[in-house]
Image (cartoon, rainbow, N blue to C red; front, side, top):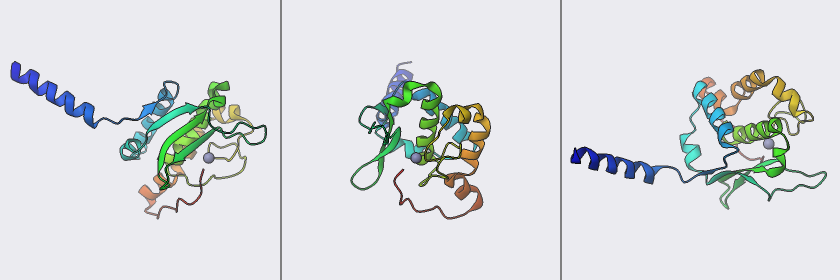
Length: 169
Ligand SMILES: [Zn+2]
């Protein structure tokens, strides 16, 4: 019994020390869980990417001017590596907006969208969305487009070469 206990203790110690130190805001955790579940469905790996992040957080440091509000952003270090996913606190004004913004930023990172697909076409990866509610009302279809057309998915299943990450989201 003692041996079992000490093994258990050892296992827990190893597990906790290798666990990621990533900080995920409680309000974003359910959205992240939902997103990663769909990654599993599409067989898209995310463990390594997740381990490189410091935080997925709601912040008050993004610009909020009338014509220049950034609702979400991938934060990079001096080497250009993504270290955090920042979501503007203003996105919390509505759960639907928060969901679309969070999935948009998650997709930039985990699905490797280095660019947007259009200016304002009512899709999750548009530069802006005039109506977040329309996007959410068509959610399952939106998710299918988001994942199936993503660079990560295309690369995995069509063998095409990933596009360069040369444009900041
Ligand atoms: Zn973007």
